[in-house]
Length: 326
Image 1 (cartoon, rainbow, N blue to C red):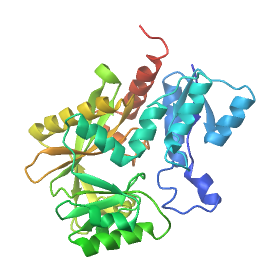
Image 2 (image 1 turned 30 degrees about the vertical axis):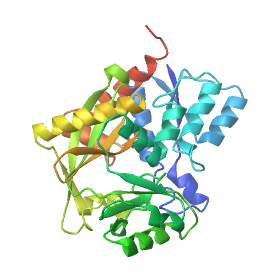
Image 3 (image 1 turned 120 degrees about the vertical axis):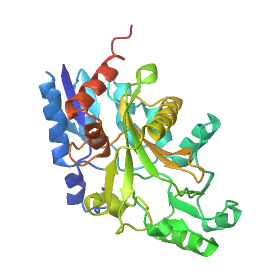
C-alpha cells in the first residue's frame, strides 16, 4: 500500500519567522522519520507530502495515495486540524485518525466539554469567555484554572493559570489577551492527581493502551502541566503506572469520552481527579504526538509493554477497516 504522510514540520515554520511557542504543536524531523520507518517495516511504501499547501499542490497535479497518514495540526483558524481531512474527503482519499467534524469540535475545548457533560461524563464546571466584560459573569468557586480555548501542547498555560480570586483571574486573562483577542476556557481547578490514557482503535474496537500518572517534582510550579514544563519535562516531571483501581476508572472514563466524541484510530484523553478522588475529563488529543522518544502516547505504550510498531500497525489496521467495510 502507498501511504502519503501529511504533517507540519516545526523547522519549516521557524524558518518563516514563527516563534517556538507558536510552533509547539508541530513535529520534529525525527517524528516524521520514525513514522515513515515504522510504516516501511510494516511493508508499506511511503511518500512525504508535508503541510496542507503541499497537499493541495500535489492533488492539483493528480497525485493520489491508497491512504494518507495524517498528523497535520494546521496553522490558522479554529478548524485548522480539520483542513487536511476535509480536503482528502473532497478527493475521496482515505486517511488515518478523526474526521473533520471531530477535529474541529475537539480543538474547541468548551464545545468538547459541553458534549462530554451532556453525555453524563464528569468534567470540571466551566465558562468560555471572549472579552474582559464577561469575567464578572463567571459564577464558579475559586480556585479557577484559565487556558486558551483552542490551543494544545500546554500553550498559554503557566503557574499563573490558577487563580484564587477575581484579581488573579483578571490578570491571567489580560496576559492571555495581550497579543490579541482569543476565546478562553475558565474552569474549576481540580486538586487531585493527573493522568493521561492512550486509546487505540475506533468505536466498539477501541481499547485503552495504557494509563500513566504525571508526577510533578519540587521544581515544578504548583503541579501545573504548563508549556514550559511539557517542553522541559525531563527536569520537572516523571511518569508512573497508577494502581489498578484508579487505572480501571480512568480507562472507563477515557473510552466513554473517546466514543462519545467519535474519535478514531488513536489518541489520548487527559484526566484529573477532583477533591473526592473522582476522575474528570480534562481534554482529548485526537492527533496525539507520535515522537517515539518524547511523546506521551509512545511513552505510556512502552510502560505498558507495547512497542512503537504495535501503535502504528493498530492505527493503520483501524484506518484501513474503513476502506473495506464488512
